[in-house]
Image 1 (cartoon, rainbow, N blue to C red):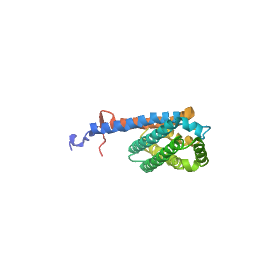
Image 2: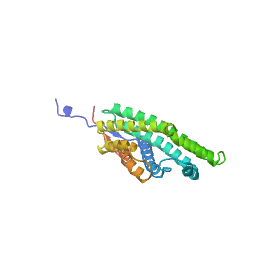
Image 3: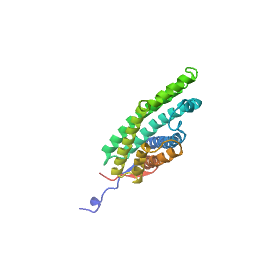
Image 4: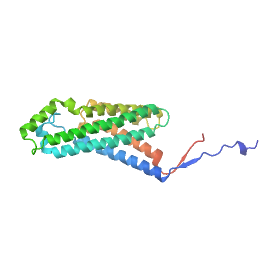
Length: 237
């Protein structure tokens, strides 16, 4: 047998095509934009009066209140769907079950949370409309909503629980896949502290910062794998 016949063929080269790079670029751009906007949402999220949304705290900024909550809801859906999809792409084999479960929970959680928050924004906007209700009626309505806080915020709270559970499952998948640096799933797991600490103002910004950094880490890994220019050497099967 000749030496030439025993030589292994060179590993094939797979070049990233423009369509793949464009798709990766759009996905990464959405993730980065949603992450930055999400931090701003936490920083400027209406805090109310000691955590209570009263007529005096909502009525003067009712237009901003509705707009900002709606923006927060839309941004959450877009950002979490992109983050879940990107994380799922980075777990092609080992850990894929946890990653798939996590992505699905995040998608359902984002939809439920967004529907709840957008509904709350509309409810408080028209509940403080001086054209439709006088001050006393609006005050009584908001006091009633405050007494029924669990019912009012229930859908959004349930969506947040699903989202946190999904992010934890996705973090497990990323850890098992070892396709990203270890600090990415570790920081992503810090999302659980959002149930223990305030999520608005400066404190809210600091609370959300670790998981935001994890999201940016996932975006960077997606770009390196699917979007960066150059060739990828694929080992022969």
